[in-house]
Image 1 (cartoon, rainbow, N blue to C red):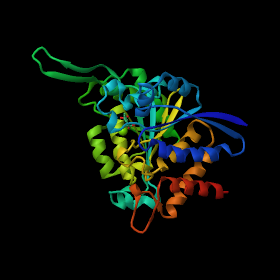
Image 2 (cartoon, rainbow, N blue to C red):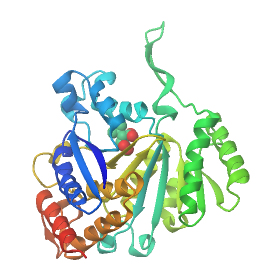
Image 3 (cartoon, helix red, strand yellow):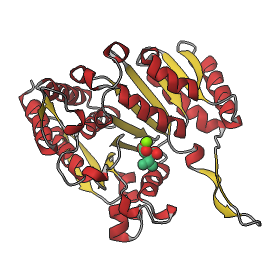
Image 4 (tube, rainbow, N blue to C red):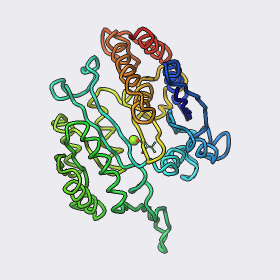
Length: 362
Ligand code: IPM
Ligand code: MG
């Protein structure tokens, strides 16, 4: 019997509602033979700020470091938008990524066949896409120094950030991408802006060198980010594994999510060498928070990623993904993925349907 400890951080907005459904699924995992789960809850984001005065309490970091995995809902909301940058809910999320050194963010974009017509792109374009965006998550322009807003002697103000990558930071994320590609179709496309930015010129050099040296069996290509944004819409099936910087990955993964029909469907894993955090890629959707209509499936699918990458339970991961497909096949849809003729349900009903599918699975 293995015993695992999961820290759940619901956060803000719809975070609490969607995480509650994923916790039901964790309950199912804990009832399976050979594994028991302890589930604890902690504070992050705006709700942590309201309770403690900071968006990332020390205690949350300490507990996250000790946990076998962290499951996060979402952070942010208009009521905290006026706070100083250092106290904003988003700082909580960036802070935990940094504190746990979660440098590797995996964002899969896969089409669920029952949802294929929910994509704004034509069926022929998106059918069969299976892209893994590997986003660098703990460095780059999100964290580079110096940063800030200053007032110049003539009274004008100047805002600035720094895009910086060291060769070891590039190498470790590229290595992850090559390893993942080896388990897929052995294709990596590295996305940069090497024609303009020195830091991503170094990115291209380091990725190429690592590929030549350690991964000659993986086909490596390079693309400028503007072209990649266009190619993702023109012909998304050309991509298998994309590796890119923190900010380019933020943008391209939102774009890739729409190929699949809904950002409400996509999970993510943020991995370091010692810790891991799982979260849906969508935000806290304050406009629909508390209404019980948010889509919990991305969070449920994040549990599947947790089972695969942190808990070594691929069988349960597959069963969860199958259960999600099954409820979609049954025609159940939350508002964000509603289609003509389907049956619209709320957050709790969707979660219950997944549980039902899991419990009747063999
Ligand atoms: C994401 C989000 C975050 C990011 C925000 C909420 C700080 O957009 O996880 O993609 O920019 O990384
Ligand atoms: Mg984002």
